[in-house]
Length: 371
Image (cartoon, rainbow, N blue to C red):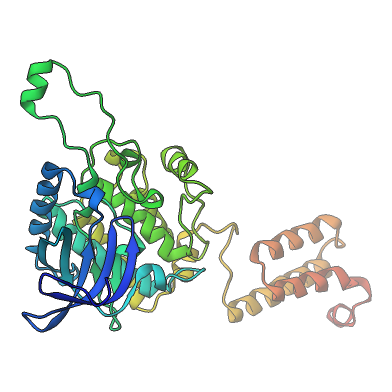
């Protein structure tokens, strides 16, 4: 295809390839600009009705006019080749940016908010992505997110039976729906071939966010069948301990098996992520947030160093005074002092305990002078 001209697009290089087609960089000879040209596999466009539904949704996506959604310029056929001409974006896919340990928190939240904003805009227009994954998210050199391929997965769906067909047969079609999307990121209802809505994208978004934070896919297994089984029946491994509990709850809620228990709108999820991003940008680390949210096992708060010293001296004075004016020091007295020092956990109180155990009151020069 390199060097070939399709319609008025001169193909210059190959950018990538996936199950939904091959993407080339091409020059638009009419408008003198570069575009990304996605050539669709022939087997995906053999059904005229399915192709028409896809074209209608792609046109709707092209009209979204959102800064985080790649613009669709053209959908056409030339010399037997079906293609989509899209905005050409310089940068890398999110899949190329996510390392083995994931992204830094501020980067993950920055990208997540933009992705959520793009999906919220699409959902408001009645468009469900169906194939959200790192390879469908571009990031420009200045950090701007561009979500690709809205509605493209719908091209592979079976056409639903019409209302007239249902009336004539008096029963719904028994044909199973096709599994559409990428296994590691699809929702449980998508994995079962059921009808999906915007909440399916929310589940996929949760899988994407999990991977951005950890560098791992939440349900990845050795085969597609095992991956789908994990999506349907298993929970993902816990997030790292340094992730703030608030963010962990967001990811967990996105990945609920039951759509009714997830965030119900991407707009609400976006607001929650924005709040978390503001906290992160303010300089409060996730470790501090996690420590503040977790209950302490100690019975008392650790006193300030100055207060600890005063209390230590007071404790020593009390024991010395009691020994000088009352009965001899007993094991019970030592246990009381030991219990007191253990509740504080401060080393200065440990020194006090050593003092109480080592002082021989009968032989103390201090007490002899007092007597």
